[in-house]
Length: 520
Image (cartoon, rainbow, N blue to C red; front, side):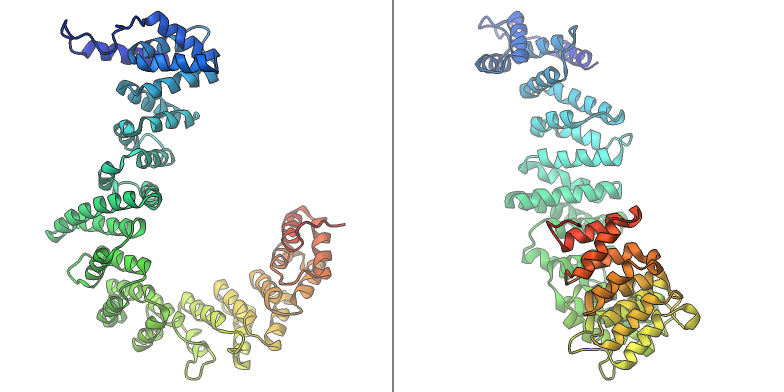
């Protein structure tokens, strides 16, 4: 099939070629006496020889491209057909000839291989060897919707790789268009190319900014689609390439501009977050949107929350307090308010009494997560805090939170309370069969991580049949133990020799704690 296609391409090329003037013979005419018979002989040498004869034969074939192509086509079509290794040699020779008609055929064969789920590595490599000449074929294949997105993503990777630096701007029109999966592949490929060479970085950035200028201009005239694409261009530009003061200033200007499309402002704020700059502008955006956000305007809510999240925490926290975000009805704002607050035991900051009354579980969880982040050491939990966390993590029937995520966060927070009362509460949770399994498993993990006696206690539970429904989780928790004690070793070895459902996890934990050792 391949040989037939190659033969047809050669015939078509010769059929449409303009008639040469008598005084000017074709470039490939055998004026040196080299003819088709010699080309056929050299092809055979290439297939069987590995030394100097191979090098000489290949050199002659490359010097007489048209004759070489004809001889290769004949050999591919011969009976018996060449084996896989011989076929690869012939195809690599065709790739080395770099004749335009072969590029299209390589592309078609690649398409067929992808459609029929056959190996594609050879065809991808042959196209890679063509360099810029393969670009039109690759662009066509990327746009072929009959191919899977995974295959089209591989083609995008190759297209970015073979595009010469001076033509990298030609890739910019592809950004922000097409399936999101392909956009992700294109973004990663551009980032990889930009990071490999500063000159490529500059070329890619210039191409994106030229498209960005055009889309922002069209957006200003009312073209909504151009505004959305400009936002996607901003995201890629901030992620892929070095950002100088000019681009940073542009992001700041777009972020604060009330006239810019919403999607563009969101992308600009994200760019400032990525570049870790523009804190004063972000504060300006937050102030400008705080009132409307708390009043229920969704666009302002998004801009406010993104601006605060993009700022350094020590600069965002005072603003969150100033705006009283913990009182917001919107769960996103209230969660952010609690995340930016100080320790729960800090005087004047009654987190648990206010946060756990909020109707949205994500808000209650955000407050507990912050308790976990800020406790330990000098910020040990108060007795009231331990008591409240224990109640939240307890059984639903006894007042525990109905949302499993909130209950687990309370258990995690208990683990960070550096005091015996908290460790005692965790042991009770681990042993209480009325508590959700996920909470009990988390209690075991926290005991291993923070309670000095926790690893031994959890090791004993692991080999206790009363905890068989937690065995996998307890075995995994012991893999994080800060101490590799004999009790832990014995428990993991016994478990690794037991139920296949848990043995693999126990073995992994044993290897992590006792590298190079084996159970006796």
